Length: 276
Image (cartoon, rainbow, N blue to C red):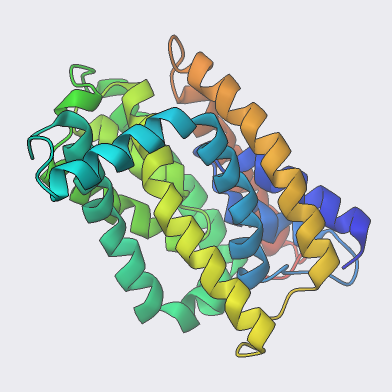
């Protein structure tokens, strides 16, 4: 992989990670149009996602520090256990469990079979339509203060579906959040919170395996570093724009984009223009 290719992939990662359009699907698709690259690989994808999650940490730093501090103080009995921020900490922990368990159990399939572009195309269309329907008809009567452990677990299960490229981590969690009657900014913000432990643990795990040579999918050092830095810078900008947009806009444009991209991908695959 060249540095130029790494710049492109980092840009794609930063632009798509926080939008409900599946960053892993876009990296997989873009890789097909880069000579000699094809699939950048699950390890490369997981590692450069550390850049976008660093953007989440920077953007929501004060919120995250407040939540972690409240969770710890409640755990040791210094503040009430029903404190809102402490409860939110538990909701994030509970919501992270599904993707952690399923990511380990289905690791081989995630790195091989599930990266087929046929699966990517179908997931883009199907889950795009589900997001559109839910966002159109679900009420927006609940906020961050209403998050419960049950809802956190349900959204965590939806996040786990993003192990399949094309589903989208943010798309899965926001769809579940909207289905549970949370407003759009709340669904998006919880999606960001929920992604932090999941993506960091996944990226660090893949990074350690790559350094130790314990995996066949070993990304190159400098291109991966460049892509990670670019994804951080672009990701921060996208978070800021998205949070402002969701104060007044819907997910409809992303639904249309997903369906169009999925159909285009099916056409390219059917005509033999690209390989699955």
